[in-house]
Image (cartoon, helix red, strand yellow):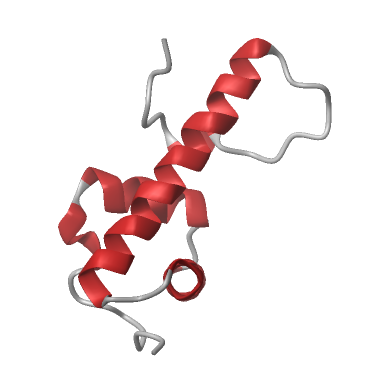
Amino acid sequence: MLELHRKPDTCQSVSRPLTPEGVELAIDCTVTLGIAIGLVMQRYGLTAERALAYLANVSSSRNITLSTLAHQAVDDVNTLSVPTTQVPR
């Protein structure tokens, strides 16, 4: 069974062939990012593309990985309630 929402430090790019556990982890990380994008879309009325750009901008300004930010957003939906950067429109 897929255990959603693992630690963000386990979401890394892999260049070697994936094991079944690696595939499961990749899916989990993708799902977490998708949930974070959905949260931003709903909160700010953005398209998926603009929500991803917003998350990338916030992760850059906070000097944290996109994966870490996505996990924080899913852990606490209030994490993005006060944007540190301007919301793209």
